[in-house]
Image 1 (cartoon, rainbow, N blue to C red):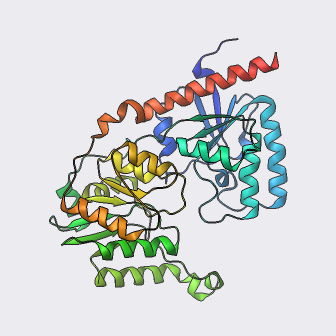
Image 2 (image 1 turned 180 degrees about the vertical axis):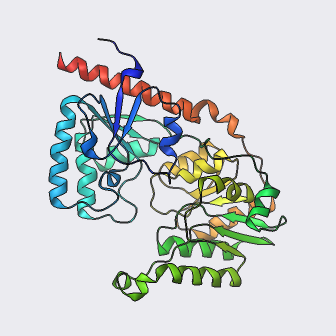
Image 3 (image 1 turned 30 degrees about the vertical axis):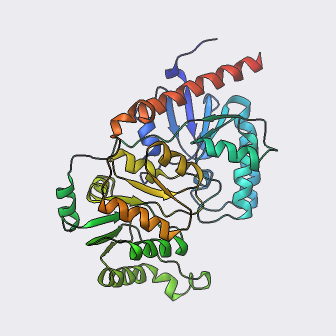
Length: 361
């Protein structure tokens, strides 16, 4: 039985967030009908269920034991009619690697018909850490470039918009700071930079209070505390720190105003920031871990030994003082343009559906 891509319905069991354009980029080039909604929005005519971030299924809140038991029943229901694909963005949630979250992740892996890895490292790590989950198919489909962010400003205009001197040497740390360790690492690297007129830009610099304070008066005043500390660092060092998410329309200003981007992650599997730098043709320095190092090496960017602030500072100083020539985004378009990545997903959907239908005959 044959079918067209337009007849395929793909269900994503979560509400799509505007904070992350990962799926928007692919959806712009989709060939199927994509449906986003909570788990009760599933219909039996959806040939594919594609899970990306497991915690998004529960609105980014830790599920209860009862909710997990109910969800496992839901997964079994989905498998009767649909192919379940899990796109593996993270090993486990960034902020809460609890027993129930690990249970949720493993539950999805156990029921998945196919697991999509964003790099070869992820595939290798999975085979070594989870050999007992061996029934699913595994494919590698890389993270795509970003094309939906506005991209019509130059460096001078971008620095003017952000109030940064044109002669400054700008280090950008984009994305959320996820731990006190990452925050301290960023400041440590910046202090060690051997470059004049250096400026640190961190749009979303957070500070992490002890858990016993999180529900106290200080915890409720966290936003004010963050603003005050950011103001202090701005005066003490040459920093431009914020504590809120940047509008998508303003992303280009931060990227184009910078001379180099630092990824301060210590235990991440992937980083969209690496692809953000490639998309705006800005040098990226990141840890030699996970799929991150794979992306950076393949794109002729830079890696440092994880948690080694001295090495990271030396690399960044070299870039600031002797700007390198980089491959332009067009040289990656053939393999990493979202249109090409969306086509790989479409081909995967079709192959899995055909295989699933054949098994029912």
